[in-house]
Length: 112
Length: 111
Image 1 (tube, one colour):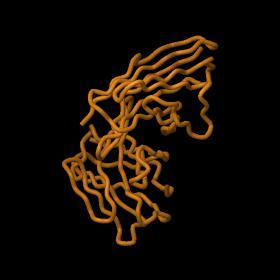
Image 2 (cartoon, rainbow over the protein chains, first blue to last red):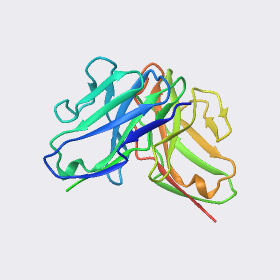
Image 3 (cartoon, chains in turn cyan, green):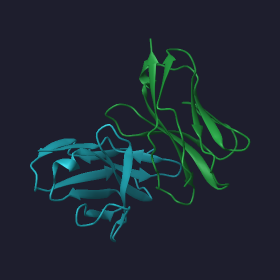
C-alpha cells in the first residue's frame, strides 16, 4: 500500500492570496489526483496531475485558479490562487495503486 | 460512469452486522462497484470492489445481485470505529482515477 502525506495540514489565509499544497507519496503511483471537499459535502475531483505535463481539469475547474504541478512520480502540488471565502474547503490528494486509490489526510483551508 | 443511489443515513448496533445497500441500475458490463469510507476528518479509505462475483476481505463482504443493478456492503461485526460515511462508486476499470463520489451513506454505530 501507499502512504500519502500533505503539507500543510491546515491553514487560514486572507482573501486575494494564494496557497500551495504539497502532496508526497511514499511509493510510485501511476496517477495522482486532487479533490475538493466543501463543508458538509462529498468529494469533487478537481484534476488529474500528469507527470511532466499540464494537468487535466474537470468541468468547472481551470488552470488559472488551481495550477497543479507533478515533477515526478511521487510528488505533486496544488495552488489555490486569488482565494475567496468560497474556496474554504478540504483539499485532498490521492494516488492510484494497482487495485485502489490511496488518499492523503487532506488540507483544511479557511479563507477569511 | 453509472450513477449510484444510497440511503442518506443508517444506524447499526455495535457487534451486529451492518448492511449498506447501493443501487446502480444503469451499470454497464465493464463497470466495477467500489466501496470507500471516510471517517470524520480523514481521507477516504478503500474497502472493497467487485465486478459480478461476491467478494470478501478482512474488512467487509460485497454482495452484487445477479443482474448487477444493486449491491450490498456488509460489515459483519460493526464497531464504533466503523462510524463513517460510506461511498458506493461505479467505475470502468480503464478510467483509472475517475472516482466520482456521490453523497454516500452516513453510518452511525451505536453502543
